[in-house]
Amino acid sequence: MAHTEKPTALIMIFGATGDLANRKLFPSLYNLFKKGKLDKFAVVGVARRALSNEEFQLKVKESVKENGDTETNADIDEFVSKFYYHSHDVTDSSSYLALGKLSEELDSHYGLNGNRIFYLAMAPEFFGTIAEHLKKDKLTDVSGFKRLVIEKPFGHDLESAKVLNKQIRTAFTEDEIYRIDHYLGKEMVQNIEVIRFANAMFEPLWNNRYISNIQVTSSETLGVEERGRYYEKSGALRDMVQNHMLQMVSLLAMEPPIKLTTDEIRSEKVRVFRALRPIKDGEVNEYFVRGQYDKGIMNEKDVPAYRNEEMVDPESNTETYVAGKLMIDNFRWAGVPFYIRTGKRMKAKSTKIVIQFKDIPMDLYYQPEKTVNPNLLVIHIQPEEGITLHLNAKKSGQGTDATPVKLNYANKGIDGLNTPEAYEKLLFDSLRGDATNFTHWDEVALSWSFVDNISEVWENTKEASFPNYASGSMGPDAADKLLEKDGFFWWPITEIDVENC
Ligand code: NAP
Image 1 (cartoon, rainbow, N blue to C red):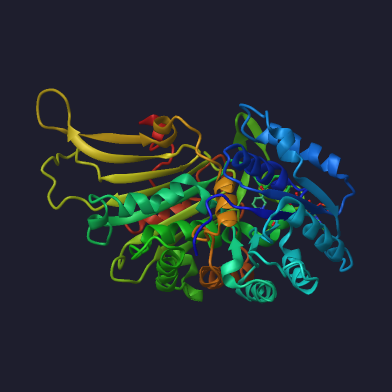
Image 2 (cartoon, rainbow, N blue to C red):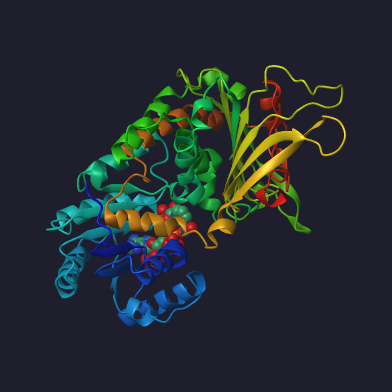
């Protein structure tokens, strides 16, 4: 499909009074508007509470001022004048008719060519109902395009994801469904493909002959905060591994696509998921480690254990940390472990990928206590964005000793600009019809089936060691052992920071 560079559409946001709309969607839309990236548009906000259009516009204005590009808000009044509010309980059939009428009026008033985006920024249990109503009450009968943008989580396991998918497919084709994984909107995640496929020095080495292991870490310093009720049913495996972590692995491991089109890229990613070695019941402990945070001290303040957080069972068996070893059984990756780890209340907030290259065949610089270090390519995803290449060079002065050096590229430093927020990019992609950085159903289904094997075992066996890592640490000891038994160790994320280079 040709991507319209300056899209025109009616954007309907379900859950328009919620946190996501307020913190991410309104500021992202404003940034697009300000950069002149939108042609004609209007927004309808939908939620239950009663608000007038003016009250809603004021909320949008405040959200942009607090969360958006703060340099200048000169055109904010023009921007918010295109926002309308419709108070509506999504479970109530009757109010969809009025929403349909409002949409038609706005469509003709603003000349929106019958193009509609339905953005579901609300709890996933409503996704199916909304999609079915949109179809039944003819909101999807449009002369232009219609697209559904939905937030995670997409189901709770493979079975529930299938049910949800069936419901939304009654109203939208797969091509019209944009499943958000906001990691795919991050600048440096999108950069993985460019680093790999645009550099002659990496692609020839990107295989099991030259790479010894790959480590993907996504650590948070925050605890579960006020999300205890949701998190108790989810845990780190469903909340982070099934989507963000596996998506990053698929980008690292995929074959070069024959073209940079949505279909070609997605089909290469799907092939990685298909090659992912399934974890059998008896093997879960061999490949995966779960953790739950204990109390600890962070920023000189005492913080409680997960089990003492609000809305959390004092005996909770939910994991707040996962480490795993993934094997991709194909020609390129046979024998190369991909280690992943993610957790809450860890020592630092950081998402990083470390590609560790194999040792050179003979270490000429070996002395009992000195040797060359392995070459590493580190991709810094967040909070800092950049690339560091760890090499060995001669130590200055007499002799021929080797010493580690780092070549460093900091994304923000070079461009002198803040890279756009993931949501800004993803919203723009959905408006112009580019689904490359959204997850296809096949990826969702395959990643759930991989994760389901593990979560079934974990749910049915109480982990006696919980809580097993202190808040402010890098996770349980067992996660270190997972690598030690293969002769590796986790590269410490703080030492390989782009800022420390
Ligand atoms: P939230 O703050 O709880 O907002 C929920 C919204 O849904 C509110 O606008 C609420 O407004 C509306 N709502 C609830 N029940 C409704 C009903 N029956 N009919 C119509 N509207 C109803 O949730 P959120 O944090 O924005 O999250 C929304 C979605 O985004 C979830 O799927 C979440 O997993 C996902 N997500 C959120 C974030 C984030 O940063 N917040 C990040 C990633 C993913 P009323 O009470 O006025 O009806």
